Image (cartoon, rainbow, N blue to C red):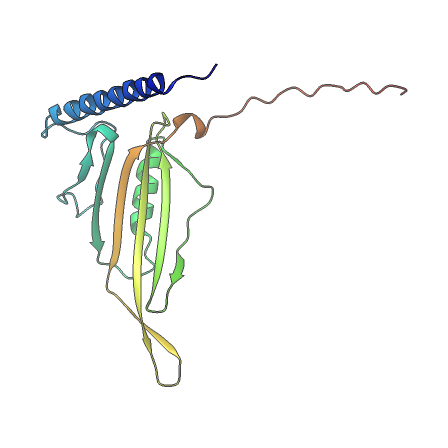
Length: 186
């Protein structure tokens, strides 16, 4: 049996009205959040000397971020070791195995040296991502050799957010017991 056009339009209208209602309710809840209220989640510790840097926040998403320019030369990892020691002492676990390394992404005009590390909270609900960036402006020489002029300092970005799907991170899978397979004729 084929639905007629009127029933189909009525169904589409009901779904669209429900969607608009959901969006309006979520907007009202978001606006009613008090701006002075602290964001949810664990406190985001700032690197020493940058405690007064203002954070970008989205409370309803559990998102907090701050950034600064570190006055150290590339390839410094001092910020990484600060967060590694602090977070791992509190039970946070690195998302990847081994120590992250600087990696270069180059274009015709510049090369960017990037560093990225992520830790997951003990309850698997939050993650902290550390990103560092050092840029080299490329200068063309007469003999076609390329020299680089590194910009001073390292750009550092520290982001805390809710994990996208906490159940997928660090959940050990139960191993199924191996079954003996009976082979006919053996």
